[in-house]
Image (cartoon, rainbow, N blue to C red; front, top):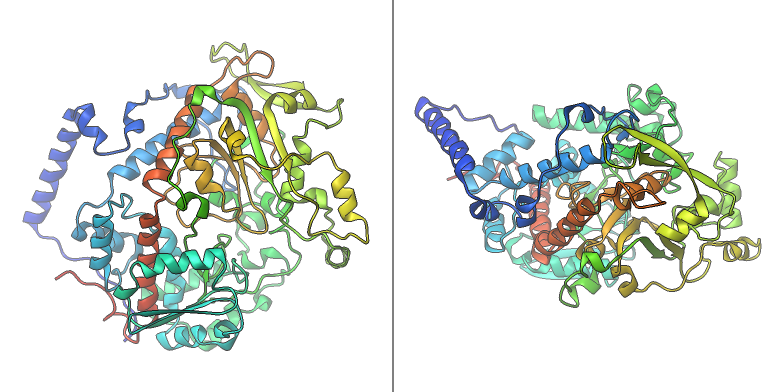
Length: 602
């Protein structure tokens, strides 16, 4: 029986009257609730904060399809709008969470168009027991799972059992049989894989027999084209499955003539319609997901080596579990744990006023391989990048205290520098002096993933981009830190949030809980070319000369939100709640009768 739509129930008049009456009571309650009552409804720092003052003329910014917002010099700073919107977004999301199993089931159906999987009641009991707050925010799971529902159960199981995926001599494989948990494969004992196994074992007895596989590396390299994804969603809505002929079409790079990363895009997507006119005005990331979408933004193509590829990615619905993937990626994204965070108790963050107004980052030089043979191959395919274009070397070179003393850069500051609301302006500053004043950024270790014989390693080691080893105490003394991709995602984000740093984040790999993390409330998204960093620093710490026009209070609020999120919403049990719900979806995908494997209220 095909997996079918769950049709909405017919409501009757008494239910409608009751609902309206309940809503009216809720509105009256919200208006009359005092501050102490509100503290139990949403995180205390949100309710204790003074709202950012609203000024209608300053909040008419237009957000672009590529995820950016462009500065209008005649208006107030767009970061004020982004921060204000973020505070409202978090407050609204926190308050609207379902309070009962019935409400959670209804919300699931509203978002996805079909019923939750069998076992949803056991999952609900788990999240209630462990005080998981964001019980409805699992859209990432359904973005991952829904395309696979367009494969028949037999097709899906055939892909799970495909020797290319299930080969015991490759990657990692977990199996649950008769409530016993088994691990095989050469990677199962790696840190992330062991962490995943520990998360699973917390609820594995609630799952039926199954097998699950990982890719050869932590991330999956198969993608799903926009046309493929839309066709899959339509199949699920109609209660039908792909035929083998349809799959052969959608899983072929020959379905369109493009042979680069845009092979996954549709002809009408912004990146192919040249809908991103050039402008020299400063820009900020308003929508991180749109910004890293290869079909929405051409800028991510040109400034992130992990995405800038001249060949088309394989379009394929591969049923593996991945620790990192880009938004178009195939597979099921799973949580990862930061070992140093869980091996010791969370330490209270350092007092904000005792920290330095500097931006800190340390990391090894990962991100791409700079071997001569690979470089020659890339050049033959149209890629002309040097090691300086890597995300980590580029950051370290741009913000080195040893840059050319003659370099200047335009920095966004307030006109009048008195907060008099007369607009914004660009003012030139010496780059070396800015870096000495604001930056503590550099690579650590030695040159790796480079060609010693060709001399690339030596060239990298001579560059002014190296610093002392990373010191977590020094990092904790800084108000601002950078979060940056390596060979995939960095795995440091959680720790930096917990430390109460304001995290400036550049990533092509959204986390499993990115739907929970609100940009400009929990962290600051930055462009992959880093051209917004000086302007962000100027906004928070004030103009480079006198520190006027600073918004240190807003930075402190973001710091507090970050710490609170790490402590209350990125716990071990929060990751288990996500994984438990994902595994219930996976069990339904494996089931012969997906309707029977769907949850119905008694």
